[in-house]
Figure 1 (cartoon, rainbow, N blue to C red):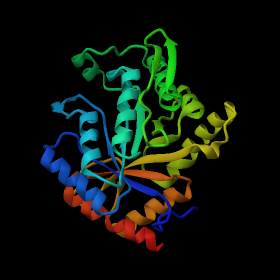
Figure 2: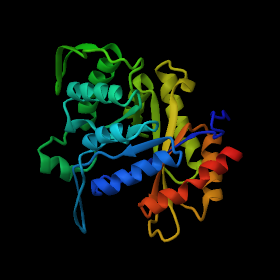
Figure 3: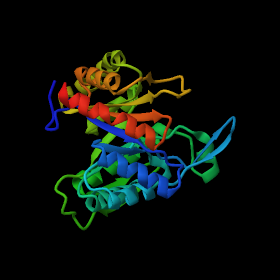
Length: 294
């Protein structure tokens, strides 16, 4: 198991809620960086409609841009950007710009979306989601890596398109896709830098999903070891009423859980605490030191 310079065997990130007032959101973001976490992650939704009513969300990319200006060290990731919400060539331009502004800290997580009510409410098509994503993914990855493309697809066009000027940041943002579906796994194996196993409950959940992504890599002639492995984890702290995820009583238990994920080959775990507030972020932080001493 590789050990990083800070003594921890894997990176640990934290999801932040995209429905909070800016002052509260900023306080939580500054705490994540100040407490030594490795990354901040945002979801990309417009609204959420549930049985209990409509829930609001602030726009992901605007928040991400603001984070780039108030943080200095943490990676900034999306898990995941809903590709149909933005033209893929424009999204490549946005990612290229934010990566430069942040000093190379963007991790671009991409997905096809799943919550149909927000597509309907904001006027986006919900049909042929994989086919649309496949074209968008081709445009995004090519532009960010090769900086030019001439693409004429069924759903998207990018004719004689270039990304200029070239940023001072040497490497493009890493591209992450979270999935366990066969068709999406093929795209991951072909072009992604990082795979996300989506929501896991324990280290024992990793092997069957890892075997599927390894098989997809071998099918396209890629060494599975060249694909980074990550996952999201719902962490339920005392007082939580959430039924999914892992219930954690204290930092030592969380440190052991994260070490178990590292032993299964994950390079990063993104934590979604419940309750979802500043106090929970502060309660998670001692586990980082526990891991460093392991």
